[in-house]
Length: 415
Image 1 (tube, rainbow, N blue to C red):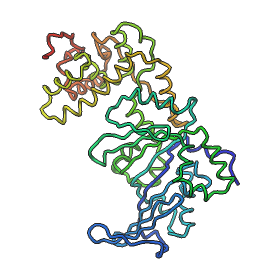
Image 2 (cartoon, helix red, strand yellow; image 1 turned 60 degrees about the vertical axis):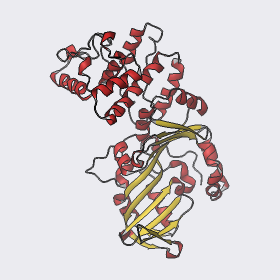
Image 3 (cartoon, rainbow, N blue to C red; image 1 turned 120 degrees about the vertical axis):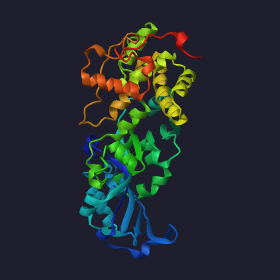
Image 4 (tube, one colour; image 1 turned 30 degrees about the vertical axis):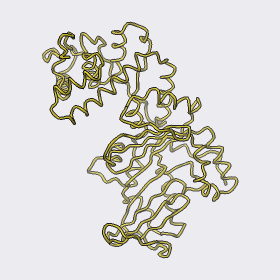
């Protein structure tokens, strides 16, 4: 029987499209040995591998290590595929795998003890405008240049530029209806009844899907805020209240500014409006960038004068580039409606039972007089501000007694 609507519980918590887990082989009671193919890995070690279908990507059994690894997607839910993998559906996912009789294992123990090695966190969105309109703006307002942009199914993929595979990050936003109808999904569609297939098509009509791929345990810990003292078990991951999709999107597309009423005023007023939206650390970087008149070449030269290591210069330049890019977008002629559309997209990524992102603390807005309300700081806040200034090595730009920004004199700029 087809449901009128799919579960909305997932909108309030973590949803996963694809997951890879590993657990003790002792929880496996039997498996179809004839369906598994031996593979030689790591200089002679033999593992047994089953290549699956309809959502079960593969199962690998390592007799020497006594481990079983499997990777599967929410397609194992069959007719309930749109519900994705959640704490409410994981039992159904695993029971369906067991029901295939390829491998039989203790479902309860796997939920409690299996370690998660990889997961693609996802969410279905219903947007008020066609997806290409949001994509056009995401490209236009690309703030974090550390991410490479590529087109994907009327949508876009952000891939973090990095050398280490452990640091890679993927963020996708795309037309789910188009993706569902791709040839690669035809076998899955053919496994459904006509009624189930039509129900899926109705559900995915005008559906936008966002995904962030957490490719290893380091990224899972980072984005799900799991302490190193806690195992990354299937149960711990699926009961997390964190929102990695929103975290990664905010990292790629930091909120530009909400109040655009001062866009057409004089430059200093624009600086005052812009700085309201920054954190304390960002304010310090912005002040330093203003000292160099937002010239990235001068900023790099200045950083090279302060830091001996080239790696330190490059790392700090990433932060300056982001702030300067945000500032240039803010002072440009991009309409508040366009920015509002990006913020609408951001709001759609918030879990329904979670509050919106807290607004940054509003600081005193005079860039020339003071970046922060230093007159009213507690001793603890004052100490925190001092530590931020020192950690960023911005002592040259602040009076370390009053913590006020020094007056800028262009003659002091050494180039």
